[in-house]
Each structure stands twice: as structure tokens, then as C-alpha cells.
Length: 592
Image (cartoon, rainbow, N blue to C red; front, side, top):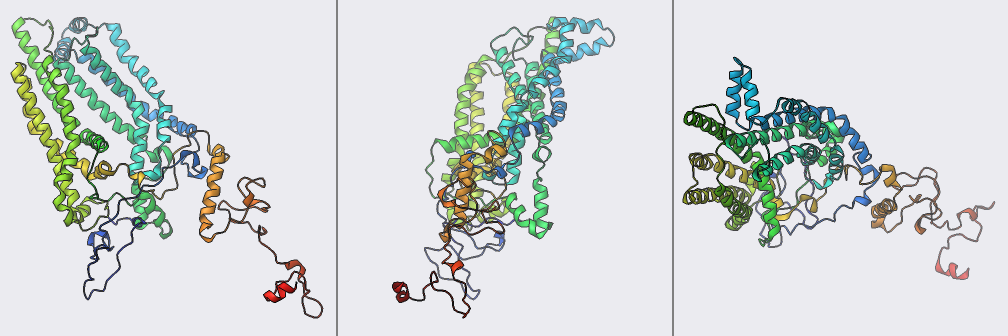
């Protein structure tokens, strides 16, 4: 795939000069190396760059009306409401499945056996319903009314989605794909948040022994929780597709922009390449390696994002399988010992596990946050092997010219896997010393070591390959602005027309006009956006100008002397009248 042209380098440096092929240029301590990089698209490499400069943050109050993607938040809300039917088709089945999982979570195996026995005798199912603490009318309302009510309550959060998505600033995101991912996430997250909140509240209520059908976090309850969280994650992914930026706002997808850059009309390629991706100014390796608590928190954030993609799905799948099998084993062992179908209290999680997991989890999180910083310190020897600091979109091209970045990403994954492995070993030893290590605990320890630890390494490496610059420097928008027409998705208040009348916006328009001609030392010619009663620099303006401040056709110049042009008509003898004519010399000027 052809790489889109990137933005010019930082204004604080210039590309190295080209040297003839007959021989290399002499090395200079002030200029970067003059060798060419084959992965940079034929451009000279960039080395020994200064610290990236921060750009001023975007002031939402000074955004021009034409720089909003939609007219207002109300307009964005209307678009979300028009797509609410598709969101409802995702949310209603989700809530129905969550209700079913809560009912079956009391003992999935016992419910399954009861359903099989109900084929021969329907009274068995009624006995099981009463035995589990439910009633027929209660189950009817739970399966018919609760999903519809929960779906309606979730859709009532559409204004929150509109407010959250409207605050996005596309120019501060590195590429179009990141902008559209952020918009779909902000639009979908408020709708799926109630489901996550209900699961969290259910776990908390069970732990405090609230009067529920779940007596505790048994194997059946834990298997239902694992499946419920997994279904929420799947529904969130589907909602993000339903509420994507092309469907919601009608903007072209990143794939369409890539096709325009490669095979589109020539006059559209430059604009499409600017919208597709901006040049990342956060070069690696950094000049300084003094890090505070902020990079640790950013590392935890990107690590959590990697875990949501790699570790959490694998862990939920394993949890559902292990706890479902445990529920079968517990039920049949108690049936054989009691000799009846009576459901007794299932085995609970040992309290020692909760007591040990809380401090151990905090220490593990701290180790995961410090792992990228430790990898940066241990990769100092590879700084000299970096041949180009330019950020290439393709990872293979990037690591070919910057082995330091590749080493940091790989070592971060290995370090985080080592931290998790150490935590698993310490947890197993603590449970064994406390006498709370059961057969299920041994199974989980083995699965953690054989399955989850490799996924932790993959998640850490994935996160650093994509977000190492964020860990070191912070947001990309603090150092660059992408060439896209939109500064914000929607105004914070009012509509585009309301923003056009705001004095702050009018002052911003005047400032941009002066900046366009400021290098020539001239004031803009033409009407002032404030009208004839505007600033002093626009007094006496006539005619109608365009949006850039240029005078319209037939407008008279403003503020320029005429040097008596109207009083210098030629006489009958071919000579001009004296008076206001331009003097030919200083002597003639003194004589006047």
C-alpha cells in the first residue's frame, strides 16, 4: 500500500542537504546524517532532533462556524435518535440474556437437568423454580418486562452520548481512524454503561449478603458473570459498528480516504492525505529519561486497553469453562452424598482469596505501570542504532530504522508477563499457606501460567507498539494539528449561526485575516466582520467582500491616498494642471 505523504518536519529543523553520489559528505556535529533511508519513501533521515514543541490548545470558544462537523448538539442527538432503532436491536437481546444468566446463575447444571426432566413431568420445572427462590409471575415479568424497560432506560442516555461525542476535536487526533474510533466509542459507551453498572452492583450486593437468589459467588454465579461480561463486550463492539462515524455523520471511512489518496482525482489526493494521517512530532527515543507519575498512569491506561483486547477475552472464556465444570462437579458430588435432588448451598470463594488479592493486585498494577519505564532504561545501548526518528505508520518500516522502539515494546511485554507470573506464584503460595488452595485453585494457577501469562506479554507488546509515544510524551494533539476541515464535532453551546455572532469568534476571524497579510505589514482591505461600526482599522469600508477578507468586485480601496488623481486631468495643451500632482523632486516640493 502506498504511504500517504506526511506533513513537513518540525519548523525547528530542516532536512539535510543532498550530496552527490561520488562520495559522502564530511560529518558535522550540527547536521544530521546525510544517508538516505529506503523505508522513508526516498526522503533523507532525521536524526538528533530537538524536543518536540507543544502547540497551543484549541479554544472551543474561538472555533469558526464552518469548522464544526455538525450544526449543533441537538443535530447530533437527532442523528443518534434516527439510529436508535439499530441500537435497540442490540440492547434488548443483551438485557434478555443478562436476565437469563441471573436466573440460571443460581445453578446452571441443576436448571439444565430440571429442563430435561420437565420433558417427562412439567411439575419438575415448577418445583425447581420455587426451590431457587423464584415465582412464575416474577419470571414472566423478568423475561418480558425487564429487557424492554432496561433498553428504554439505556436509550434515555442518548443525550449523554451526543454531549460526549460532540466534544471530540478531530484535528488533535493523529489520524482519521483514531478520530472515528473515538467517536464511535463515545457514542456507544453511555448506552452500554448501564449493563456494566448492573453487573458491578450485583457483585457488590452478593458480597454484602443482600437478600438475592444468589447466596454467594458460587461456581455457577461466577460462570454466569463471565458470560455476562463477555456478552457486554460483544454488544459494545456491535454498537460501535452501528454508531460509526460514516453511518452517523456521513463522513468518508478511512478506507475510502486511502483509495482517494492512491487512485482518486489528482486535485483531491492532497486533501485526503492530510485528513488520513498527520506526521507524529513525538520522536523516539526521547532526549531525557526522567519520568514522573504521569507516564506510569499513561502506561497503565494503554496496558488496560491491551488487556481488553487480549487478556480479558481469554480470561472470560477460561472462567466460563472452568466454573461451569466446577458447578457440574459440585452438584453431582452433593447429589451422591445427600442422595436427593435438593439443592444445597454451593461452595463459595474462600475469603482468604479476597484478602490476599486486593494488596497483591495493587502491587501488580504498579509493576505493570513501571514496566515500560524499565524497558526504556534497559534499551539505552540501542540509541546509537537508530537511523531515522521519523514515525512511520507501518510497524515493520518503523522498527527497521528504529530498533530502540522495537526493543522497548518487546521488553515491556516480557517485563509485564514476568510481573504477572510473579504475582501468580505469590498468590498460590499465600493460598497454600492459608490452607485455602483447592483443586479449582490449582487449575486456575496452571491456566494462568500456561495461557494468561503469554497473553499478557502479547498485550504489553501490542500496547507499546501503538502507544509508546503517548506513554513518554502524552497526547499527540499537544504537538501537532491534523489537516482536516473540522476543529470540533459540534458546538458546546448553540448552533453554527449562534457561534457566528459571538464576539470571540468575530475577533478570531479578524486575527486570522491579519495573520494572512501580516507578513507584508498591511491591514486587510475590505469590509470588517463587525460591519461599518467595527474596529478603527476598517472604518470607511465599502462594498461586500468574501469570507477571506478580500474586497469584492467594484469595491474602492480603503485608506490609500489618491495623490490628487481626480485633479490632474490633462489640459488642452497636453500638460497637466499643477496643484496636487506628484512632485518630481524635493526642490519642487519645497517650492510648493
